[in-house]
Image (cartoon, rainbow, N blue to C red; front, side, top):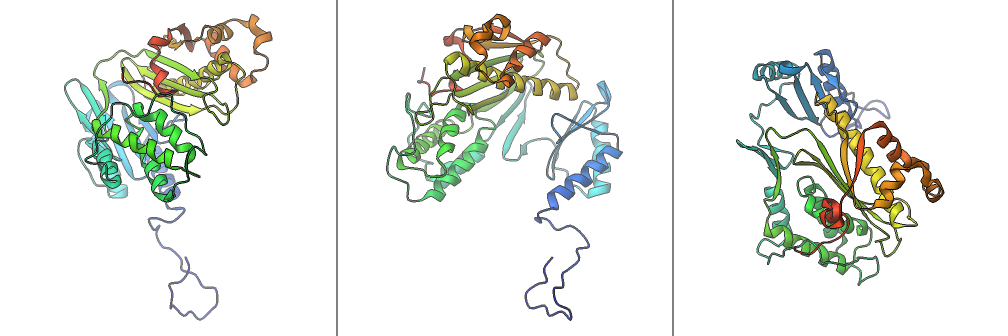
Length: 368
């Protein structure tokens, strides 16, 4: 550390030697994580390869899992005595503060009921509305106008760029419990470098949509089945400036939504089938990661994940090797779908567009 201002040393270029870590230094988080990982590993915990922030130990009734975010920790187990023992151990090593049952974690509100677990970010959403001055605004029923396409030069440049960037940054974290706004936030976040008045107007409409139900969140029911059901979709060449497509998918464990994404594809697709196939590749990689994570949590899923797609050509390409002439322009890495179908990781099924759950991750939908 540099010497404090006004300190006169006998020798030039003197520095302070730290006897202990200071919170907020560049290496503080890394050193803390290394020390915590070492302590938990010595206690018999195994660090997950799918998610390094997850630590597990034991089997069946003696199973305990620990999830870490910097210095905030969630512990879960069917045996309360194991949790108590872990708390005593952590307190002896690090001097922890026990906050009791899970209720509020990183801005996410959790409520355990007889039917399952409800999570939302009501307080966080209300804080966004209050900071933006939309607490008493008139609600709207959809987050974005249907068929609206935003571009870099669709209106005059915005004067206060900082306010737009702060708003989008906060909305990005709100997606953690609000999959219904994933598409519009993905669209708005593409213009943080040079936002226009039209972009801010679209963001204000989103705030009015949040005003209609700030406490909306997700429900995870008790005793649900352990079958993975996945929906994959794409909107071909939807970007007016680059003609890149949008990938959208959502993954259900039983009836519980556990993963979703709305993202612009990295390359331009020459056909709608290619765009759907690239979306399938992204979705299959997510399914593979989720299965690895569930395996670390000792949840074994024997059946292949049911992957629904509304493009029959993309399904045929994935299941039929005869389509080589039509697919050799698609990058080799996209053929991960075909490999995973052959290995039995996923089973591709057709679903009509009217039943495509992932449709809302690729385009703005009407109220119905």
